Image 1 (cartoon, rainbow, N blue to C red):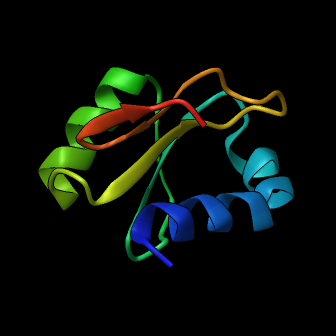
Image 2: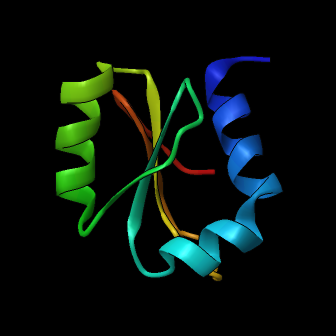
Length: 79
């Protein structure tokens, strides 16, 4: 399983608890699967790159609705 799938699977399997804790926030899920929160996609992306490097994290809006776009550093992927 690749890192992107592992990070996305982590989000899906912990979605209820993540929504309870981070609803309306932007979360970064790096390879270590330790969730970080940020107020905006821009800040989440910037801090994710600084802390984890390009291609090492999933950036996602924590919302009960499916996000239109999820950003996976360094590419944008529509899931």
